[in-house]
Amino acid sequence: MSEPKKLDRRKFVYAGLGAVIVAVGGLAAYFATRPPEKVVETVVQTQVQTQVQTVEKLLKE
Image 1 (spheres, one colour):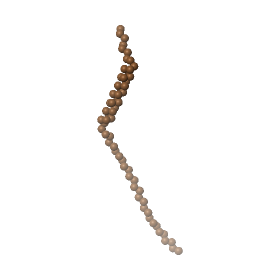
Image 2: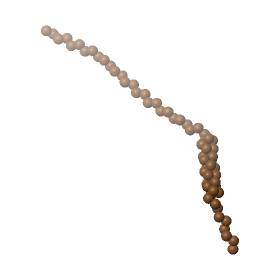
Image 3: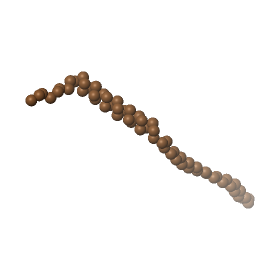
Image 4: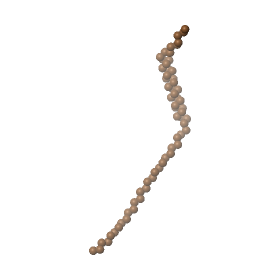
């Protein structure tokens, strides 16, 4: 029987880094090709109306 090939540490690290680079590239491509999101802006406007009345009371002396 032949012994299975051993994977040395350096090749393992290179394979892991390669997988990370491919994943990051895929994410970057995904976000770069997404259509722009629709922005909905709601504006609430409040108006305050003030009425001033002058009441004069005539005092009879």
